[in-house]
Length: 243
Ligand SMILES: Nc1ncnc2c1ncn2[C@@H]1O[C@H](COP(=O)(O)OP(=O)(O)OP(=O)(O)O)[C@@H](O)[C@H]1O
Image 1 (cartoon, helix red, strand yellow):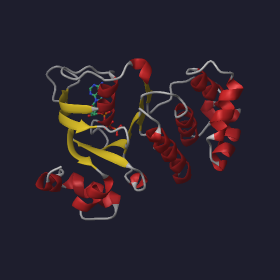
Image 2 (cartoon, protein in one colour):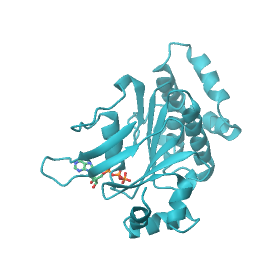
Image 3 (cartoon, rainbow, N blue to C red):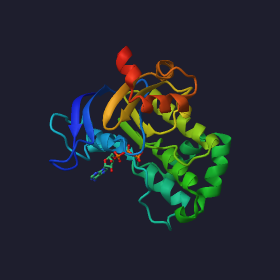
């Protein structure tokens, strides 16, 4: 999927939140949108999914082909873990819930199975932020869609559970005909992932390319230092080298 010279403002005469965005998203990689708070990551995801309409860009996917995990969870707090899993898995299939659940559990690592057991009868309102997000994202990963969008899927999640989430997203990338896009602030989690980084800064796409090159042009092996260097120079080094 390509985006060419995209521009978006929330109000007609207000300054653009996204300006001259040109990039591509790839089916064989995890596409990651990176940037500071307020950089425009969610706005870009909203444009891609058709939540916001923009002249000159037609979202290439129908609504039914997309699953979009938002940062918040808009479900009643009284729902229990098992209700959340049922709601999500049954939204895609008429198979009995037991079959869907067995299939879901097979896909989980041992610690994830323990987490699922613990959360099964717990109300959403009583779960920790990370537990809630893990449950939702792991359930969503079971759905069959063409476009999967995850808005900061690993925010507030411990490093162990974060690894399981990143593995689940990598598995989605390996499925045929799927496009997977996520946003994050955490570059560390991308170290061992086959990913394509899109670095948004002040509404502009200042870098798109692979992870190792991003570190290299910022002269460090530490992703946090690379992130900071990049922001401090407004991506100058990339412009020098060319993307
Ligand atoms: N509905 C809206 N009306 C006007 N401005 C908005 C609206 N939604 C977002 N913005 C502004 O657009 C800019 C980009 O917001 P966006 O939510 O896309 O950033 P983000 O990169 O996802 O940030 P974060 O990492 O904090 O989630 C911000 O300055 C934000 O205040």
